[in-house]
Image (cartoon, rainbow, N blue to C red; front, side, top):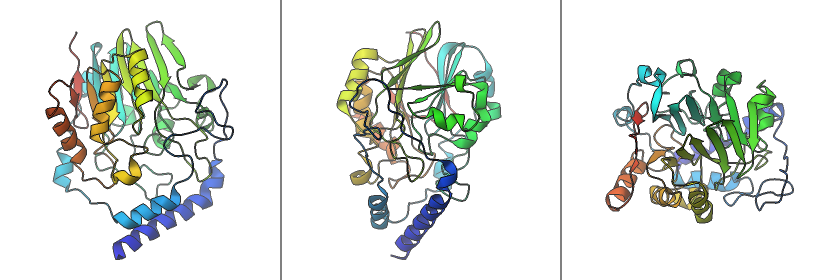
Length: 355
């Protein structure tokens, strides 16, 4: 009971702080995209996961579940390794990918480097006073990154859109963002021509052999107390000279979304699919997936190889630390015909063999 009271007190205190400073942030304004689509509302985007602020239900859940179970440091340290900086700087004749933690993956092939949801700072929080803190340090700093061409952003939640990392990358990259999120970047002095906002099923031609398509996902958006679903949330399909990658971003399970992606854009050589932040399931599953659902997505989008992301980096939800990895391993073992679905250590790089 005392622990629950402390949790609730901290949460309310943080929310008061957010309310006091939110006016300085200037919440996002809804800009309805052209065309007629089911997710285009009149005042906000329509989400199958969450269409209003879940504050009260979230506080009730936290009261019921109590504090997070802090994993042992030795357990956490085993989930990271030193990054091979020489490899990242070398030409990528074969496709390779490096997990930098959470939803941040560096994809390199030929002369194109893609970065997903870059978060390379200490906190997933609107203020530097608290909030989810990294269990595993970033695999590298922004200054240590190889030259990045394109960054794709899935949505505006703080564990996916990090102010500090965005400022450091600045105008060195091309930003592909969900519809409505361009205004956030412009307020941070990112040049307008560097930011391309996209609605679902729009395609951007980056160069003569690289295209990026915004695809659906079951999630929602919110960055201040007053901007629920004012900006869109995307997954992303990237095609670099025939090497096809799908980045799920953050998502609950939605069969028709993922099967259509597989039918229209698959098969995928690599998919980046979340496997964590699902506990307790009665509260989290509308917006996140558990490992069983992640395996179904892997099959739906017709993935030849998938990497489990969105676990092990931040302590965001109530499932045990290693459960996403261990659950996924059981699912893979119990389905012999399943194409590979792996996890990696933070800092690890894999190189794909030619077909």
